[in-house]
Length: 127
Image (cartoon, rainbow, N blue to C red; front, side, top):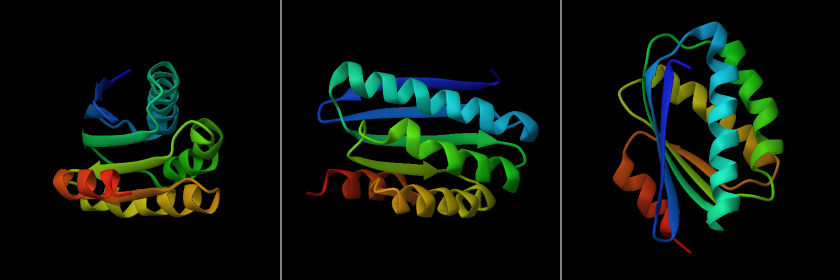
C-alpha cells in the first residue's frame, strides 16, 4: 500500500494521518482499508471522535471518491460519533472530499472536511 497510515489515541479522540502518493485506480481500495483500520481502532479504544489528516500527493479521481463515499457509511456507522477530515495542500482533493462528507452526512455520520488541522480539532471537540 503506497499510502502510509499512522493512528494514535489522543485522550478523547483518535488521530490518524495518511501520507504517500495517490494512485488513482487504487485510491478507493487503499482509503477504504485505511478507514477499516481506523474503525477497528475506534472499537478497540472506545473512542468515537476521529481526526484524520491527509498529506497525500498525486492525482485524484472522481470515480474513486464516489466509490469511497458509497462504502464509507457501512464502515463508520455505529463506530464513530464525529469525524473531522483535514486535507492539507490539495484543494482538488479537499473539494472531492466534500462530496464524501455530504454522502456520509446523509447516512447520519457527523463529519466535516477542513483544510486546517487546528480548526478541525476545535470542531471535533465541540459538544
